[in-house]
Amino acid sequence: MMHRRTFCLQSSASVACLLAAPWAVAAKPLPRIRELPLAKIRFETLAGQLNSTFHAYAGDKGWVPLQLVRVEERERAPLENPKALDADFERFSLVFAGSRAHSLTQETYLFEHPRIGRFEMFIVPVLTLDSTRHKYEAVFNRPVMN
Image (cartoon, rainbow, N blue to C red; front, side, top):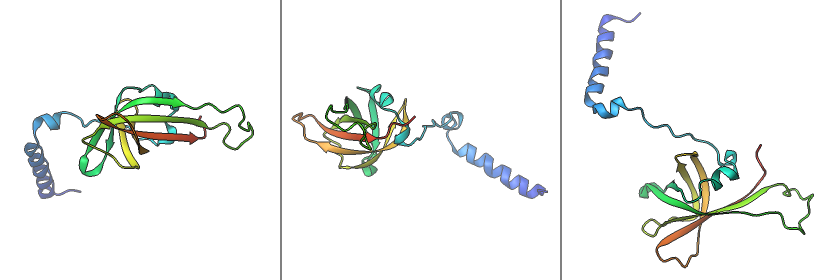
């Protein structure tokens, strides 16, 4: 059983915290971004976001905007062994473009997209003749998830 003194102390501390916080922040719920493993995101979902903006968390640089500029699906070649262990794997690549002001290194980054959610993805810088932006590629060769 809680004593009156303990109740009053805890209640006054709670009220003090609410008064210290701006009302606009206290009134709005924080946005929840769905977190999921990249393995659960299907090719079709990623391909459907062509030309949309993703954000990659780059430590001191903060959230760096990257536009998905190309999606390529690779079909199995006619001469490939249909009984190979990876014969039924999905194979595709994503190419992102970002500002020259925020270059990223080859690394796994935390990505965020408003429709998909938050996930980790490995990207590699790729050479480009475009002098206005950097490009990055993510390559997939993985079992199809059902």
